[in-house]
Amino acid sequence: MRHWGKDILLTRRGLIVYGAGFVVARAAPAGLTPTPHQTPGPFYPTAKPVDSDADLTRVNGITGQASGKIIEISGRVLSVRGFALGRSRVEIWQADAHGRYYDSRDRNQANSRDGNFQGYGAARASEDGAYRFRTIYPASYGSGAYRRTPHIHFRVYDEKHGELVTQLYFPDEPMNGQDAVFLSLPGAMARTAVTARLVSGGAVPRFSFDLVLA
Ligand SMILES: [Fe+2]
Image 1 (spheres, rainbow, N blue to C red):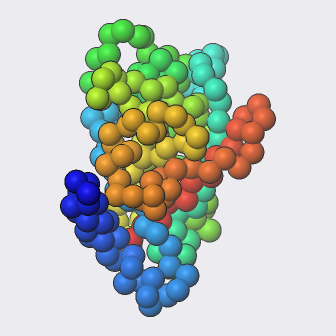
Image 2: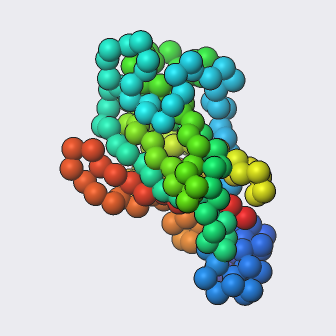
């Protein structure tokens, strides 16, 4: 029973986070769960790489390919009413296969950065809200209580709906259950909303991740 009060607190936080969504859901039964906000973390690149397209596994002018497991992430940018937010801007940034970020403030000296990995990418969603990135499965990084499960940072900007900053997590990733940022999300619905879905396996696994702006 000691956790009862905490659960209520978490539920209240959930109601605050999802308050707008619930209102919309009552007005429109097909309402979608807004993707929860998450911290941008310390490594959103202050200086973007010259090559910042949607393929993070290749860097212009370098013949090598990024280390690590290549994956594809695709999805749609949507409003809570399910309308496509076409032409919205989607950015991602993430750790490379060595757990390093592109940003110069990442001073993790234990591993050198993978120069074949772009680290950051940006894309414009199509008219139907679709976006796609080719990247690698990120390494975990950090230690102790600050150890992070593999994740990809997202920033989405739509002229009408504004900005969403969040993080993508992977399904069946055992480290999710020990990650403080993931666990800070209030309950299963919020955690599911930031967890990508495996669409197909094979040589280049494809994950689906929709971004729903409140
Ligand atoms: Fe991160």
